[in-house]
Image (tube, rainbow, N blue to C red; front, side):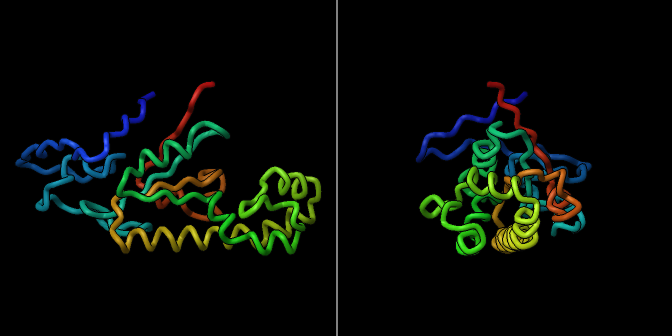
Length: 193
């Protein structure tokens, strides 16, 4: 296991070494730190071809997917990986953004806790009633997937250096949302209790 880097104190710029000079450039390979790698600062380096998730190469947005069990520290790791200039796309927050009104209409006010979704209350209802669960999944999954894709496209257009996808079951549900295949790297988080 590699520990996450310590947060740097505010007001101090990080120290960056100049990239090594290479007479025979190697192809670009993704890395967790958008400022690292053999061609991070080399404008003459060949850029990799575009893939299903957009352009690759120096200056392109890197997309990382965070994997791990429940309460393993994925959200903390996502924030640290994104860094101060990156963006975390958090599927749980998007659920709240796209669903409050409709959840209240479908399941009643008991599934909301103020402005947030009471996930435990919603789970009790949805997992105890297969019809309610199917109805919920029929509209919520497409809405959340669409919002994630919009945010990812917007981050790429804005040239955000690093986007981290904090999406439950990223690999398990990839056939439905195709997000894992858009990631340059997947990071597994395991925090022992």
